[in-house]
Length: 417
Image 1 (cartoon, helix red, strand yellow):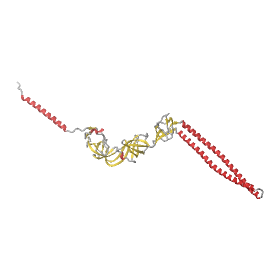
Image 2 (cartoon, rainbow, N blue to C red; image 1 turned 90 degrees about the horizontal axis):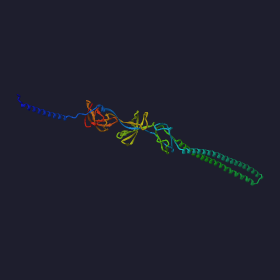
Image 3 (cartoon, rainbow, N blue to C red; image 1 turned 135 degrees about the vertical axis):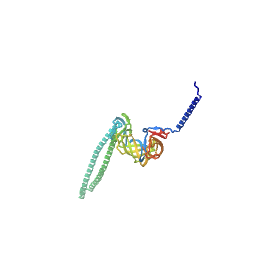
């Protein structure tokens, strides 16, 4: 017969109580230990960040901005006279020369005026020829009159000499002699008057010819003007370049001085680069620039800086010193880089995504093992397009993360794998 053992049940309860107490203590200890641990650093893929090494040496300061090719010579072609568009011979985008006919206009009234002016010129020339003949006849008549008076004068002189001799011999009366002398005096005065009349006529002849010649020049000038206006109905480019605009259509009536076309000279293009106002303060005329046209890089030089700020940028004119690549046309978008200065023996690194010149930023610096990056405060100096000067916080050979790390602003340590 079995005898029950009362102490076994008591020991079993004691063991269970000990196990529970030990478990509770173990859980509390583990919880306390975990609370004392620092949170694990987040992991960043090395291929997804941009790393750069701090260097010391010469740093090239540059500023960059977008811009466009702008023609220095723009030729606006106005209508010299009113008319109707009959034909369009060249379309925008075509290369044209100075004598290329772009379009043709019509103006029947102007053409009729030109014909009338031409006939007026011919009529004035015919009148000049008739006047010359008339004046020649008048000259001959005056010369004949002078010759007759000259002959009568000489005859009167001879008669006077004969009468004097006859009067001395008592053959004629004194009255006859006085008549001869009076005749000589009369012809002398008439002869002088006729010569003066001939001289005056010569002067009047030149004046009459000059007046008629002026009349001819007047009608010729009117005819030339009308002819030029008729010729202008065939609208020419006037310069070599690219036809950019032709804002008219066939059948359209245009008024005088209305703009018919715009031609730009592609041989004299310049670049207008828009630089952010915060960077434009160091830009000066004469500085070297390089222009990227997406089809080649052209050397240039700053020639003008706009004094006004527009939409946060300053317009900088750059003259091109190199040959334009193929496809270079007005309004082509380009990227301009202007060299400001060269700084010797400075500590610099690639320009981070965030961080302006002369400011303090937090950058992640790789530790010695290269697996962990810790945040450090870095004081920046002057900046360039791709680099920035380090004033304090980094040393030569330090590797820093330059890409956007704003998502990790809440931590000071990341793992880079």
